[in-house]
Length: 113
Length: 111
Image (cartoon, rainbow over all chains, first blue to last red; front, side):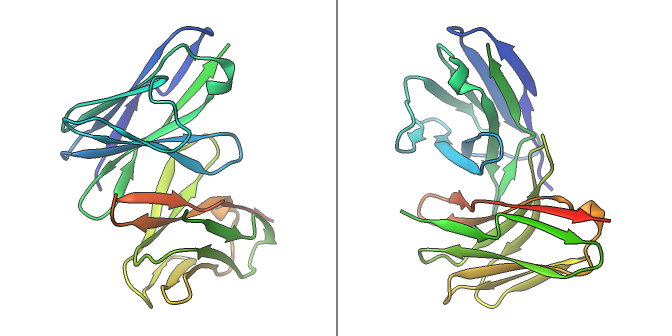
């Protein structure tokens, strides 16, 4: 099956700093990628849809100025959490849209201290 | 707004027993996915159900889809400890290729 990677897998940062998470589709091109957030013992919540070469589409309630998404190529989307706060601590999962399904990355655990 | 609910949210079952997890959704869709998630890990794709009446089986797991009832089931046969995980269904929304995830069912199989 298709492979999607995320980097870093785990990051700890101080409150007020920014963190960038990369999502790469390794063996296929993805014009569309998705970013999800998952809090402990909860389901995945879609944050935004990332489209190559255009602006991301954010879900209701997600601050686009806080969660910056860039999809500069057909294999890379990045999520930057700006001015992170402890409440942004979560598990962030990306996916890349293939022919008939989304392929999920391994996730990035963000801890903001 | 599309709602996807799973029942039960938590299931503790003994090895060797059978059980069914239900996934109800609130709007028309003809594509549904089941995933497994182990603690601290991302999602593992289990099944893709693409049409009404679709049934797929892999090992001790069998998934089905009834688009008219807006219901999918994941049946576990003769559970083993290795099946302990959280299971999510996800409904596909074609217009934006989005997935809406169910609430999740945490399965614990005891010896």
